[in-house]
Structure formats: C-alpha cells, structure tokens
Length: 167
Image (cartoon, rainbow, N blue to C red; front, side):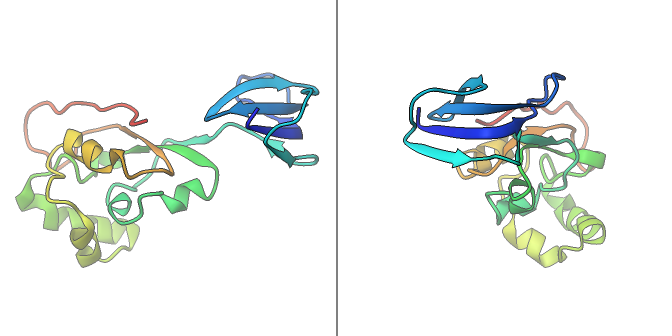
C-alpha cells in the first residue's frame, strides 16, 4: 500500500454506521477498508480520535470566476471538498456572451464581494461556452473536480451542453 490511514472513525457516506477501521490506498484509489490492515505502507497516518471520510461534494458554489485565478479552489479543498457544482442560481461565466461579461461581473461583485475588475481580469477570453471553461481549467485544477449544473442567465438562446466531471 502507498498509504494507510489507521484507526480512524470511518464514515463512508453509504449509510452504514461509523466504525473504527484502517483505510488502504494505492495511487489515488481506496483499495481496502478493514478493521486492521496487516503489513506496512510507504506512508502511514494515525487517525485515532479523528473522522475519516471520502471527499465532500459542495453542491452550491460560486467558484466560476475564482477558479480562473485560484486553480486549487482553496476555499473548498481546505475544508475537505473534492467536488464542486458550479453554475448555481443561473449565474456562471460559461457560457456567457462577451457583451454580457461586464454585467455578470458586476452581479457577481454584489453577490460574492469580489471586485468586478478582478473578476474580468482573471477570466480567459474562451469562457464563452461551458465546454471552453472545462477545457481551460481541466488540466490546472489539482484541488477539485467540477460539475457544471446550469446554463448562465446571460447565455442567450439555445441549448448548452451539460458537462460532467473533469478528472
């Protein structure tokens, strides 16, 4: 095993009761969850008295602009979030017509208290469609997985693809 987290209180999200167990990891995959894994791992973490969980999914974020300048999604991943849903409240920067970006940045400034100019300065010009947003950030986001939820209120007419997880 590459990593074993030992003696943690495992809450796995399945609905099963919390239990004390070891979690074995190889690469980026959990391969075993057992009361007492035998053998040693390359790295071990003692988790006695701590809760061990899978990453949390934040189903309501407004990280759309932030991820342009904060590719690890620090406000989320620092709290155990590994997957985020963007495009909530009908507000997202992709898809967005170029002529509507300023309006949308002003709207987001009032919602998120991020200055309009900072938002516009951090956005790539290819944020015109959800697919472009996904392609732009896909390879630079070590911190979170993104799921796009809705089309933007400023997207205009037509159907836009709903993009799934990046990694």
